Length: 182
Picture (cartoon, rainbow, N blue to C red):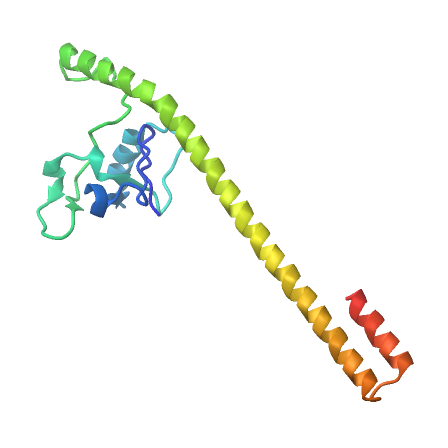
Protein backbone atom coordinates (compact mmCIF):
# COMPACT_ATOMS: atom_id res chain seq x y z
CA UNK A 1 0.00 0.00 0.00
CA UNK A 2 1.41 3.38 -0.92
CA UNK A 3 2.46 5.98 1.56
CA UNK A 4 3.47 9.57 0.95
CA UNK A 5 7.24 10.01 0.60
CA UNK A 6 7.24 13.67 1.72
CA UNK A 7 9.27 13.75 4.92
CA UNK A 8 6.76 15.74 7.00
CA UNK A 9 3.73 13.77 5.80
CA UNK A 10 2.52 10.55 7.37
CA UNK A 11 -0.32 9.75 4.98
CA UNK A 12 -0.78 6.07 4.17
CA UNK A 13 -3.38 4.74 1.77
CA UNK A 14 -4.71 2.16 4.23
CA UNK A 15 -5.78 4.99 6.59
CA UNK A 16 -6.15 8.12 4.46
CA UNK A 17 -7.40 7.30 0.98
CA UNK A 18 -9.71 8.50 -1.78
CA UNK A 19 -12.82 6.86 -0.34
CA UNK A 20 -12.39 8.14 3.21
CA UNK A 21 -10.65 11.49 2.72
CA UNK A 22 -10.44 12.19 -1.01
CA UNK A 23 -6.65 11.77 -0.96
CA UNK A 24 -4.96 10.11 -3.92
CA UNK A 25 -1.37 8.88 -4.30
CA UNK A 26 0.72 9.68 -7.37
CA UNK A 27 3.89 7.93 -8.53
CA UNK A 28 6.99 9.87 -9.46
CA UNK A 29 7.19 11.04 -13.08
CA UNK A 30 9.57 9.36 -15.52
CA UNK A 31 10.96 12.66 -16.82
CA UNK A 32 14.32 13.10 -14.98
CA UNK A 33 14.03 16.89 -14.57
CA UNK A 34 10.51 16.70 -13.19
CA UNK A 35 11.43 13.72 -10.99
CA UNK A 36 14.30 15.79 -9.56
CA UNK A 37 11.86 18.57 -8.62
CA UNK A 38 9.59 16.04 -6.89
CA UNK A 39 12.57 14.55 -5.03
CA UNK A 40 13.62 18.01 -3.83
CA UNK A 41 10.07 18.66 -2.64
CA UNK A 42 10.14 15.59 -0.37
CA UNK A 43 12.83 17.15 1.83
CA UNK A 44 14.63 13.82 2.18
CA UNK A 45 18.05 15.02 1.03
CA UNK A 46 20.36 14.27 -1.88
CA UNK A 47 21.10 10.66 -0.93
CA UNK A 48 17.45 9.52 -1.21
CA UNK A 49 16.06 8.21 -4.49
CA UNK A 50 12.45 7.08 -5.07
CA UNK A 51 11.65 3.48 -5.95
CA UNK A 52 9.16 2.43 -8.61
CA UNK A 53 6.50 2.25 -5.90
CA UNK A 54 7.24 5.60 -4.21
CA UNK A 55 4.44 8.15 -4.33
CA UNK A 56 3.34 11.57 -3.10
CA UNK A 57 -0.19 12.19 -1.84
CA UNK A 58 -2.55 14.74 -3.35
CA UNK A 59 -2.41 17.02 -0.28
CA UNK A 60 0.90 18.39 -1.61
CA UNK A 61 -0.56 19.52 -4.94
CA UNK A 62 -2.75 22.50 -5.73
CA UNK A 63 -6.18 21.96 -7.28
CA UNK A 64 -4.97 23.52 -10.53
CA UNK A 65 -2.45 20.65 -10.87
CA UNK A 66 -5.25 18.10 -11.36
CA UNK A 67 -6.95 17.26 -14.64
CA UNK A 68 -10.73 17.55 -14.45
CA UNK A 69 -12.20 14.04 -14.31
CA UNK A 70 -15.39 12.57 -12.94
CA UNK A 71 -14.23 9.43 -11.14
CA UNK A 72 -10.49 9.81 -10.65
CA UNK A 73 -7.83 12.43 -10.00
CA UNK A 74 -4.97 12.65 -12.48
CA UNK A 75 -2.14 15.12 -12.35
CA UNK A 76 -1.05 17.19 -15.30
CA UNK A 77 2.31 16.03 -16.69
CA UNK A 78 4.02 19.20 -15.43
CA UNK A 79 2.60 19.18 -11.88
CA UNK A 80 5.08 19.67 -9.04
CA UNK A 81 4.23 19.31 -5.32
CA UNK A 82 4.16 22.73 -3.62
CA UNK A 83 1.90 22.45 -0.55
CA UNK A 84 2.74 21.30 3.00
CA UNK A 85 6.41 20.68 2.26
CA UNK A 86 9.60 21.01 4.22
CA UNK A 87 11.35 23.62 2.09
CA UNK A 88 14.81 25.19 2.28
CA UNK A 89 15.03 28.64 0.68
CA UNK A 90 18.07 30.20 -1.01
CA UNK A 91 18.98 33.88 -0.70
CA UNK A 92 18.96 34.07 -4.49
CA UNK A 93 15.25 33.34 -4.57
CA UNK A 94 13.18 35.71 -6.72
CA UNK A 95 10.37 35.83 -4.16
CA UNK A 96 10.04 38.78 -1.84
CA UNK A 97 11.57 38.65 1.62
CA UNK A 98 8.10 38.87 3.17
CA UNK A 99 6.89 35.69 1.50
CA UNK A 100 10.05 33.87 2.52
CA UNK A 101 9.69 34.81 6.19
CA UNK A 102 6.05 33.67 6.11
CA UNK A 103 7.05 30.30 4.66
CA UNK A 104 9.85 29.93 7.22
CA UNK A 105 7.28 30.41 9.99
CA UNK A 106 5.17 27.65 8.49
CA UNK A 107 8.24 25.43 8.24
CA UNK A 108 9.06 25.94 11.92
CA UNK A 109 5.51 24.92 12.78
CA UNK A 110 5.87 21.83 10.57
CA UNK A 111 9.14 20.89 12.31
CA UNK A 112 7.26 20.57 15.60
CA UNK A 113 4.88 18.16 13.93
CA UNK A 114 7.77 16.33 12.37
CA UNK A 115 9.06 15.04 15.70
CA UNK A 116 5.66 13.62 16.63
CA UNK A 117 5.20 12.19 13.16
CA UNK A 118 8.67 10.65 13.27
CA UNK A 119 7.80 8.98 16.56
CA UNK A 120 4.53 7.74 15.10
CA UNK A 121 6.39 6.42 12.06
CA UNK A 122 8.84 4.55 14.29
CA UNK A 123 5.98 3.11 16.34
CA UNK A 124 4.25 2.03 13.13
CA UNK A 125 7.50 0.49 11.86
CA UNK A 126 7.96 -1.53 15.05
CA UNK A 127 4.32 -2.60 15.06
CA UNK A 128 4.68 -3.84 11.50
CA UNK A 129 7.89 -5.68 12.44
CA UNK A 130 6.13 -7.33 15.39
CA UNK A 131 3.19 -8.26 13.17
CA UNK A 132 5.54 -9.87 10.64
CA UNK A 133 7.31 -11.79 13.42
CA UNK A 134 4.01 -13.02 14.86
CA UNK A 135 2.96 -14.17 11.41
CA UNK A 136 6.24 -16.04 10.98
CA UNK A 137 5.80 -17.68 14.41
CA UNK A 138 2.29 -18.81 13.44
CA UNK A 139 3.59 -20.27 10.17
CA UNK A 140 6.37 -22.14 11.97
CA UNK A 141 3.93 -23.45 14.60
CA UNK A 142 1.66 -24.68 11.79
CA UNK A 143 4.62 -26.44 10.14
CA UNK A 144 5.56 -28.14 13.43
CA UNK A 145 1.94 -29.21 13.98
CA UNK A 146 1.79 -30.72 10.48
CA UNK A 147 5.07 -32.58 10.93
CA UNK A 148 3.93 -33.98 14.27
CA UNK A 149 0.72 -35.12 12.62
CA UNK A 150 2.73 -36.87 9.88
CA UNK A 151 4.95 -38.61 12.44
CA UNK A 152 1.89 -39.79 14.38
CA UNK A 153 0.29 -41.01 11.15
CA UNK A 154 3.43 -42.92 10.18
CA UNK A 155 3.63 -44.52 13.63
CA UNK A 156 -0.01 -45.61 13.33
CA UNK A 157 0.65 -47.10 9.89
CA UNK A 158 3.70 -48.99 11.19
CA UNK A 159 1.72 -50.30 14.17
CA UNK A 160 -1.09 -51.44 11.85
CA UNK A 161 1.40 -53.22 9.57
CA UNK A 162 2.97 -54.94 12.58
CA UNK A 163 -0.44 -56.03 13.90
CA UNK A 164 -1.34 -57.52 10.50
CA UNK A 165 2.01 -59.34 10.49
CA UNK A 166 3.06 -57.64 7.24
CA UNK A 167 6.35 -56.61 8.81
CA UNK A 168 8.34 -58.14 11.60
CA UNK A 169 9.50 -56.64 14.87
CA UNK A 170 13.05 -56.07 13.58
CA UNK A 171 11.81 -54.32 10.41
CA UNK A 172 9.45 -52.19 12.50
CA UNK A 173 12.33 -51.05 14.67
CA UNK A 174 14.39 -50.11 11.58
CA UNK A 175 11.54 -48.15 9.99
CA UNK A 176 10.74 -46.30 13.23
CA UNK A 177 14.36 -45.33 13.85
CA UNK A 178 14.72 -44.28 10.19
CA UNK A 179 11.60 -42.05 10.38
CA UNK A 180 12.62 -40.49 13.67
CA UNK A 181 16.07 -39.58 12.35
CA UNK A 182 14.65 -37.56 9.45
